[in-house]
Amino acid sequence: MSKTDATVLTTVMSDPLHERDIAETALELVFQAAGPYLGSLPERKVHDRDADALLEELGGPLPEHGAGTLDSVERLVRVGTGAATHSSGPRFFHLVVGGSTPAALAADWTASLLDQTAGLWASSPFAARAETVALGWLKELFGLPASFGAVLTPSATFAHLTGLACARSWWAEQHGVDVSAQGLAGLPEMPVLSSGLVHVSTRKTLQMLGCGRDTLRTFARDDAGRIDLPAMEAALAALDGPAVIIGNLGEVNTGDSDPIAELADLAERYGAWLHVDGAFGLFAALSPRTAHLARGVERANSITADGHKWLNVPYESGFSFVRDASWMSRAFGAWGAAYLPDAGDGRVNYNMLGPESSRRARALPIWATLRAYGRDGHRAMVERHLDVAGHLGALVERAPDLELLAPVQLCVVCFRYRPPGVPEEELDDLNARLGEALLADGRVYAGTSLYRGMRVFRPAPLNWRTTPGDVELLVTVLRELGAALTGG
Image 1 (cartoon, one colour):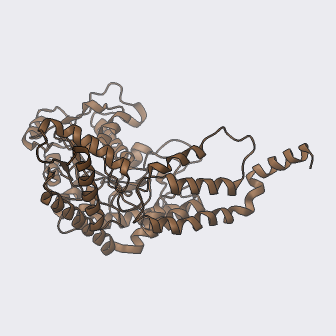
Image 2: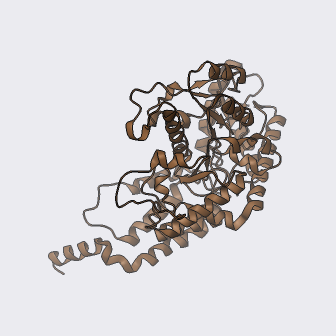
């Protein structure tokens, strides 16, 4: 073969058109790796630093002539199954992260297979109908009125963006301004009030909306951030105009929550918009043990929740619910693009109800997991995680070198390593070093945070695979590594 012929052949092979018949073979490579990988999750390290060298195989210059589908997929699967952080396994407690149930995982593969343009009914009636059904089921699951508007988003932050953009439109209209058309120029600062439990994603959303992340005012009665209701009411009473209240259902360090019903009372009394951050805490509504925490959420104007947390569907998945659905289309619709008409007749264009225009069919994993396991199955999963978190809290309380720092209310356990004889002023540094050692060890994964000025661990057992044995291992490894650091 001449050099010219070889160049032509390589160029032809690099064009995906000439590899259209091997898509099934490429998918088979992934399928063959899936079984052993999923089966290994309960026992393998969450992250193996020894495998980080594999990451070098992802690099290098962009190939002039492609290596081909099969070679590339084989490398990606091999490097990924070896070097990824195995957050879909049962011992990833570092962030508030679930896994992917079998039904959700298979449906996510289906979403990639079908590759639907899910924003418009005209482009995919299938994706739009699946989203409508899934959102209806979610409202049933959480006990929200069927009349609420709703849309799926990539994350809780985007769900905040949806709900608070509606709040901004509502607030601006009280001042006689259509903010979607005219913007914020000339308007006063939008008052936003919350407790000290407010999450950084809320501030980020206010930043993106042009309202300013530091305009949010917090009212806390203690250093844990619990709400000072009288102080918030006094601030509302002093305002000359409408405000937005942020309620927090499930704080990331302790699982603590604001009294949502009382905030709903305040919102009604002072004509405010109530937005509830229920990223994982909204799932408290599923268990009789924790449903009181979510009492009153159905009275909110907008609500945020995450699917890739306690619902255990793949990243990325968020939910936004808005009591008056018309605010969603006012905030995100009416673009005036002739090729993007309103569907009408129950045919929903979801890209007119949220911040995304181009959207994948993220409803499919949600639809599949809700249909597969139903209300009872998801309640059982929440109950199991409550039990696991309670078990971890009891283990911490019994250990002589661990200190529980907050009551276990949901799925987050807040504690620190406190061996006898270590001075208080050295504990933060010790716990920070222990956190680094735990992540480097890799058998379980739980980083540190700051709570009431202290360096703490706040593991959140949310994965559908997690059992009491997994949190028992966490305690064992922490105490083992801690003893090594202190010479105990």
